[in-house]
Structure formats: C-alpha cells, structure tokens
Image (cartoon, rainbow, N blue to C red; front, side, top):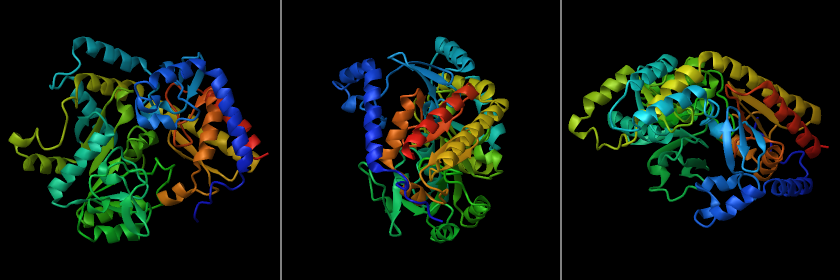
Length: 456
C-alpha cells in the first residue's frame, strides 16, 4: 500500500499559526545565537560554515557552547537533550572519556605522519570481528570510502555502472545523486553541477523491487550494487522479508559486487545490519561514529576481493589511482577509532541503547494512538523515527511522497524550544551510551504536547 500524503489531518492555517508562535519563542530565548549569526554572515554564505546548516529550523541556527554525553548547551545557556548526535557522527555521545583520552594522548605524540601506528591493526581487527570481513582500509569520511569502493569495483569487474536505489543517499558521491522519473534515470532534485548526466554512470531501481533489480543487473553493465541495508536518509524504509537473500543471489549470478553502506545502519548493533541480519556483502562501508566524532571512516573487503585488488594494482601506481588521501588513516583518527570501537560503542552499550530506542518508539506510538495522528514510527536498533503516513513505505519514492517540509520544520522547532534536538531533514532520534530514560521521556512529553495541538 502506498504511503498517504503528509497533509492528512493537518490544518495548514493552524500549522502556520503554531509555527509563527514557535519562531517568536525561539528568537526571545536566543539573543546570543542571533548576535553570532549576524557576525557570521559577514564572512560565510548564509552565516554558516556549510550550506546545509541553513535548513535548521528557526531564523538562524543554535550556536553550541559545549557538548557532553547526550546533552549540549548553547551560547544562551540552554541545556538540550541531543537526539541528533551529529546525525550519527556523535552516536557514541559527545566527547566520550575513552575517546578523549586517546585523542589527547595521540595529539601530544603526533597527529599525522603518513605512517601507521599501533592503533591501526587493533581498529582493523575490531571491525573485522564485528562485520565478518577480514580486510580493512581507512578514510576520513564514508563519502571517501564509497568513492574508493566504486573505483575498485569498476577496476576489478571491467564494468562502468553503479546500481543504487531510488532516493538513496551515500554522501557526496556523484553516481548516487540520481533518481527515477517515468522509469528514466535523471539527476535528483537539487543536484548541484553534476559532472555528467547520471544515466551515463548509474542505474536506479526502487528499493524492495526485485524484478526491477534483476532487469537492471541483466544488462551486464553493473560493477557494484551500493545500498544501505535499510534506507535511512529518506526516512526509514525496511527491506521486505527475503529481499537481502535474493539481492545476494542476484549480485553473485550477475557478477556485481555487493556493497553495504552501514554508515547510518550501524545503529542496528555492534556489526550493523550485516551482523544483526546475517548478510553477506562483498564490501562494508562505515563512517561517522566510528571515531567518536573525530573524522574517520573505513571500508571492509572479503579476502577474495582484497586479493583481486592487490594482484591488479601495480605498486608504482598505488598512490595515484584515485584511492586514498594524504590524511586518510592518520594517527589521530586511528586512535579515536580504536578507543571508540573497543571502549565506548561496545556490545553491552548497544544492548542498552537499543532498549532505550524502543522506549522512545513506544512513547511516540502512544502519542499517535492517543491523538489519532495518521503517522507511524519505525525503529532500527538504537535509531527510531516517525513519518507522516499511516503505513510504512516500501521504497524511497513512497517515503518522499509522504514528506512535508513545513510540517517537519514546525515539529523540529517545537522540540528545539523545549530543549530537544532532532536530526535535521528527518524526524529521527538516535540513542547514545549516555542517553537516559529521562531524556527519552522528555521527548515523549514534548511530542505529546505538539501532537495534541496539531490534532486537537
């Protein structure tokens, strides 16, 4: 069943009235953020260090003074429960003690030298334990990792195209900014300066659509299939039963590498969905949170694929092939990864985080039931999200059709004014090892107030 439009049950005039009220409340409470933003506009477009930050709700962003654990304090002295956590970058909690100690120690002994340290084999072995892939390489972002994996896939298969799923997101990777329009591959809305038409590099199929996947693979053009095990960046879209088993079979039959981008779905458990669901990818990409907030990412390979790559790349060319970067695998990042993976985001920590995410989802569902709001809530591990449709979507297009930017902005602003930060561009909450039941319940109470006003 297709997801219903987000406008069901929402009075647009009432929404505008409530939003204006929240804007006034925001401005009254945050004069120092306003002053900093006015100063920032002199030298930064939109007054922000990266353009997407202008999409935060309110007339200007909240400026952070300090962050610790599952909370941050803004420059106006307001404490916030952080359910965004850097959109997964701080899923470990802000500045976890073990990571801070490792970074402080390593910074005093050298930040980068283009040489490995003793932390590198420990970090790689821990990732191998979690995901079941034996060979690992380190980068500074999941975007970099995805780019490198795509190059390797083209190299070893001799094929030109990447297959992705409609409305996916894999960082700033050119090949993935494509969507479907009347069955044709076209640039995704907002794609800035695409180097070539994406139809030249990319095949796109709807998530959960196995017949469309088989048709695309039958072209013989696909070097790799790049996907999140469950879609997350258009809202959570879960795989149908049997989808991943069929995906693995089809990839093998048609000679395409299967690449799981677990950057967001690491929330499913210590080894992401790969371990939690028993998947068998050729490559796993993971980024953001593995360094506890310090820029770091990695990609893991099967032994067979790693051997193919090493046999086919000459030593003389290993530094000029478009793989790597001067700061990739630097000493500071690897110290952070080692500490975060072995001491912070432990198996025991995930067990507690997942239980709290279930509490968050149950709280939201209780509010939806009490108010009759025609929305739903979905959870993967320690990540949970509500969306503006009665039923969960089966693909990205259904999820996109159920979105409502104005409604989302109001809900986020309402939460922010009550000391709660949700992930921008989603209605998502992430649980860290430092998050408490009280933090979760604070969101439930605020969400109940908000939904009660919207659906009175």
